[in-house]
Amino acid sequence: MEYIFSLEFIYLIASITYILGLKMLGHPETARKGNLIAAGGMTLAIFGTLFLYQGEVSAQIYAFIGLAIFIGTIIGWLVAKKVAMTKMPELVSLFNGMGGASAALIGLIEFHHYVGDTISIVTILAGVIIGSISFSGSMIAWAKLNGTINKPLRLPKYNLLNNVIFVVLIFFAAYIAYIGSSSQLYLYILFFGALAYGVLFVLPIGGADMPVVISLLNSFTGLAAALGGFLYGNMVMLTGGILVGSAGTILTFAMCDAMNRSLFNVIFGGFGDTDTSAEGGSSAIKGTIKKTTASDVAILMNYSQRIIFVPGYGLAVAQAQHAIHELEQLLISKGIEVKYAIHPVAGRMPGHMNVLLAETNVDYDKLAEMEDVNPEFKNTDVVFVVGANDVVNPAAHNDPSSPIYGMPILDVENAKQIIVNKRSMKPGYAGIENELFYNQKTSMLFGDAKTIIQALITELKGM
Image (cartoon, rainbow, N blue to C red; front, side):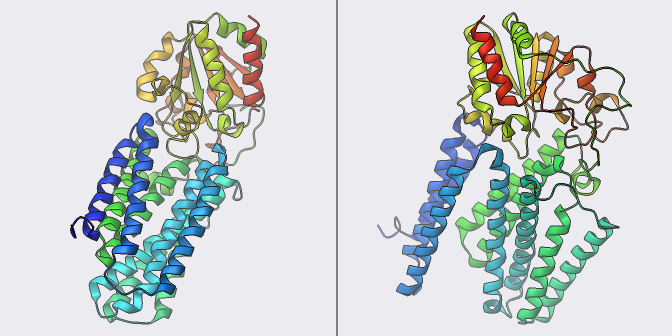
């Protein structure tokens, strides 16, 4: 009976829920349940630690812990409930940064307790560095996604500067561990140096690479948490950190593969930082823009057999996910086959479009990944691109000088008719004009996505 209520057994159960929850996150249909299971395991681990800990803890400490849990729970619940889907990437980055900050604070608090224990000191210093980088980097990522920082900022010789700072941090941490110093001054110098590196690490990275950066910073937070688990001998913290770190790393490389770029190129290549303000097209692209109306598009859709929607960040900005689902259901009721083509890096975070459409209860079977849907475009009557830009740009295939050349895209140019909904001709995050807009099969439907889709619904209902 004592074993059943032991802390080790609670941690074992919690670790199993993490693994099971992570497994279920791999499919949209089970992701919600998996998230709840993992959250339940975390709750179990927290209360198990509080009530089954063998050391002496005063009632005052319990009161402070309870108050902190209560305040954090209320804030987290309210923020998550009220956040718009367009702000979900910022929220993910913000929460991830809080995890990194927690790991760094653990190191700052525990440092003087382990002076003389070299292995523990090395673990603490590594946690301080990685956690601080994750925190400050996530805050810059949040500011970029939120629009507070609109453009990548590059200092002269920024690659050299960043590398020098990182090497100095490593050697300084090694020096602290080697001399066995208990100096809090040294520790805070390391802490603020790591914060500065996190800022400089993310500042130059273009907006188009934000999904990759968020995944990478997420893996940093997981690693920092795992180091905390190693320090305390806490198996559930170690397991959770390893799972987050490894999953974030795998996702980072998977997204790099989706863009046909190396992680080194993402960090140092500056994709997405081209300064352009072109509004009316590029002189380098030959052709003309063909505009259309909601009425004409509705007629075209009404007499189609197969239609594929390509959602992008513009759909999220317009909060048009419910409207496009209504349009999808209306088309299906007319006997038209409808699918959604999902590019791995569409939006501003990994899986952004999947999350956006899941909010409206879109049938998961209608969400097609890039590799599966690309062969189907040639047999598709109409492709409706809503707010997507770089992920459908044929320059990735046709222009070796393009910054997105070699990046796998959705081959929408192979469809019979292409309708592109955008507010204007402003380039996407890669800062380049889109060849697709000048394609003879493409018609531009300008306007707010939600307004345009609602107009299409009204037109189709009258047919």
